[in-house]
Length: 254
Image (cartoon, rainbow, N blue to C red; front, top):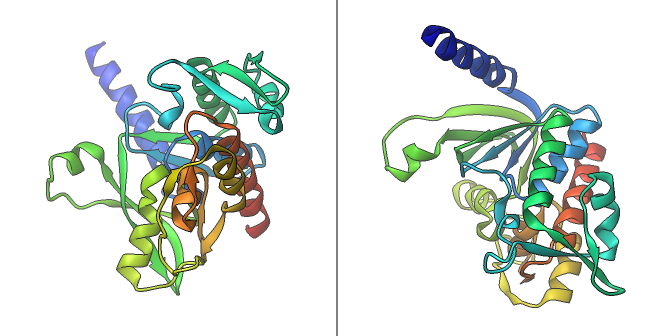
C-alpha cells in the first residue's frame, strides 16, 4: 500500500503537469481576480492553469481586514456572489458583507470545478518572449526561490499570460526590465501603486484591467500598480469585476 500511495500521487501529478505544458492562458497569481478569470475562461472552454507562489490560493481575500474575516462587496459585483452561491448580508444600499473564508474557498472550488488547474507552490521567474510578444512563463518551485538555489526552471507555453500578482506587478516588471520594451502605460513601465483611496481604486481597478503588452494582460491590484492608481483595502468587488473583465478581453483576443 505504501508504494501505491506514492505511485498514484506521482503518476497523477505528472499527468496533470504534462497536460498543462502548453495551454491557452497562463495566470500568474491565484488571487480573486486571477481565479475568477480562470473560472470564466475554463467555463468557456479554454485550457487554463493558475500558478500560485504560496501554499494556499486566495491571495489577500482570506484574511479580511486585520484578520477580521469579513470582506465588503459593492452592489455591482453581487451577481458574481450569487453565481458562485456565496452567502452575504446586506450592510447598506451600496454594499454587502461576506465571510472571507467562505468566499475564498467557494472561489477556489468553482475555479477548479470549471476545469481550471491550480498549481500551488510555483514561482514564475520569467516569461517566454518571442517575436515581440509574451507567449509563456518560466516556472520553478517556490522553495527553490526561497532558498536561493541554483536550479533551472521549466517552461509553460501559452497564447496569453495574465499578471495577477497583486501589488508587486511582478510579471509586468520582468517583461519591461528584461526586454527593454515599453508597456502600454503613461511611462512605458510599471508606474507603481498609490496610497489608499477606495472609491477611485475600485473604479480604476476595472478601468486598468487590460492588455499591457502583446500577450500580457493585468488584473486586480496588478492592474492599478502597473497604471499608477490607488489601493483599496478589504473591498473586493473591483477585484471580482476585474477578473471577469480580463476573462472577456482574453476570450476576444483568442
